[in-house]
Image (tube, rainbow, N blue to C red; front, top):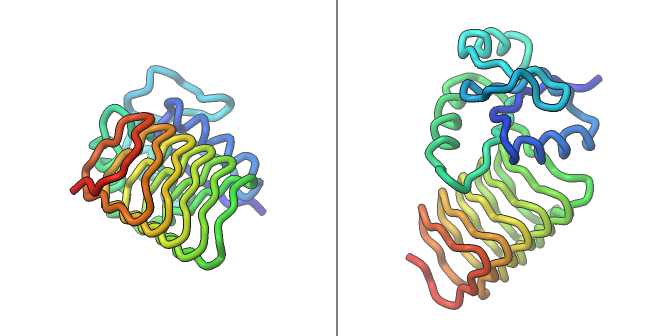
Length: 196
């Protein structure tokens, strides 16, 4: 029997997350919560906008997934993460059937791993990270919380990345580099030096 799950957000990133969840065949998407949406549905799923209605749903749905991307404003993601962590809810990791994650990696909760991602041995990720389509995290990479590794990024061995950092599409990070909290690495950047 499938578990029920609520997705937060109804934009482009939510569409990708819905695709991942549907293909897993583990969860039934109960509702989508987005108080700012002008739409009533996303695909076939009802969008609810009322916070009281959402909280009432917690009586029967224990799984929440943050389907809000991080390009324009990370504070929206942070706001919802802080809001939901006040409740006794479950934040599952969503892994594409077409991704590879080493059994020797350590992963927190609420992360998404999109199609054709590779997470190699001895990697460590915190919570609520987005590892987007086609990205590679090599051995020994350490990533904190609420980072977005965008499409086709290559993070080479033993790189350390803090919290709330965005790595733009197609970027390549040299082995052993350190990147601190709250950084924005533009699309296509070659990172040869620490960014602290």
